[in-house]
Every structure is written in C-alpha cells, then in structure tokens.
Length: 89
Ligand SMILES: [Zn+2]
Image 1: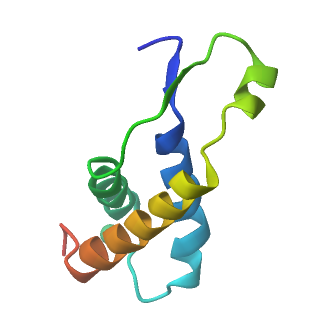
Image 2 (image 1 turned 180 degrees about the vertical axis):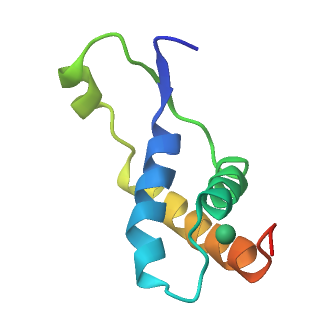
C-alpha cells in the first residue's frame, strides 16, 4: 500500500545482504533470496510505519534491539533451511 512500509521487511533484506556474502556454500541468487525473505517474513511480526513523512521520519522508525535479534535469528534459520534445499537445480 502506498504510504506504508514494513520495517521488518527492510531489516530482513539488510540481514540477508550482510549474511549471505559470509556464507559461500549457500546459494545467494535472486530466487533463493526471495525464498529466504518469504520464509523469514512469514515468521516475523510485521512492523508497519507510515512512510509519508519523509527522510527524518524514516530514521526515527527503527526496529527495537529485541526485534533486531529476533529478525537476525529468523534470517539465519531461513538461510539454513532454504540453503539446504534451493527451489531450483
Ligand atoms: Zn539459488
């Protein structure tokens, strides 16, 4: 929806970008990344904010440290699960 964004989604993407390069044995293609993001986001609470207040608002609305820890753990889990069984050859 226009005017809304899900901070959790951005955090998941950030963690994938951070973690995948450190795991050379895991496929990091676009398809697997999408599968990992889907896996993680279906297990995490969404955190929606209005995005119509501009860049300042953007900076204020960050996930809590506790949420970040949960996101990290879930993304690692997603990488492990999808990485073990990619949905492609
Ligand atoms: Zn792949």
